[in-house]
Length: 471
Image 1 (tube, rainbow, N blue to C red):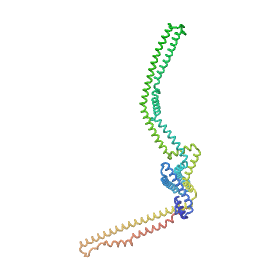
Image 2: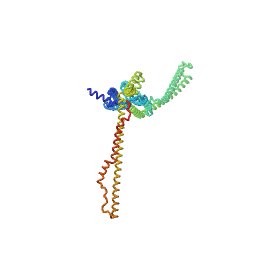
Image 3: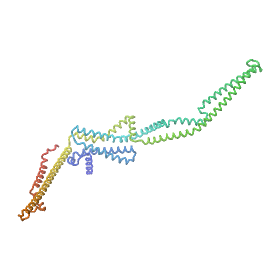
């Protein structure tokens, strides 16, 4: 169990940017790096949960798939935080620390906001769901009003009123048609004229009867001249009453005909108006249903953020709780960078000094190795040049020897005094023996030996010439 804990602690320390070789020489720094590694894992876990909630809210995918995406995002956040920590080496300079810390803290804040937003939405999801229902209802009403105000559907109320009026006209046989008011007004006038004529006729009949009885007028009973005049006036008024009756009958017949025509016209146009009303109503309902479907399925992150903002405007307590919760999540995300920044302002620890010594030592070793490789390469090049020169010199000597032999042979033939043959040129097989002799005693071996001595002396002398690296 202790071995497992030790391995877990070593893994957390390496995650926080610790060097295992230096950490083995300075074990006192191990708890600090283990704590930093734990903080990194905490931020990664928060980021994974936040991304899972965000994917579930935005896409509505199956929660195991959302959790898988969240784990990937958590790994990305851990890697970014580790990059921010590893890039901030220990430095006591305030200016350099601030220059290094400002962009890193800014990036950490951005990550903190991204991580904190889905978590905050999930914490207040019940209140947000209730507010979203209200917002969707308001959006549906606003869309319905906008559709009714559209030019395509602006005539719906008038069409409905016209259909209602046509149905009423048909049901009443045309009597409810408001367009026949003028015709009905003529009937009323004719009826009033008839009533007046009848009243006048009755008065004249009563006057004639009164003259006949002698109870009025002249007071003489019988059919005298006064009675004859009164009767003539009553008979004339009867003709007026008959004419008024005929005019009233004609006006009534005209009204009846107009009402019949109105009812037939209303019946003929009612079917077309009903079809147009059904078409417009169906199109309006289709558009509204499509909007309602989108509206009901629009519970994404943007709508939830808007709902949370509205809730914050309505309730100061909820706004304060939202702010504090978001600040908490952002502080957890920024915590690794802030811890590293605060540690940089403290005096260098043994781990920091050992790290500086190891880095400077690695640089010096690499410089020595580079110098040694350069010296050996230079010696090899010089050896190759000397060997080439020796080869060229041997070829020149061989050519000169053959030339001298040829001249001697020509001279012998010319003079005829010498009988022995000219000396033969050096055989090619003797050249390797001659080259080996020149290597054993010649300048090539001396040059190689001098180069090797210089290389060994420079390697031995270099550590003593350098100044010790400060701790």
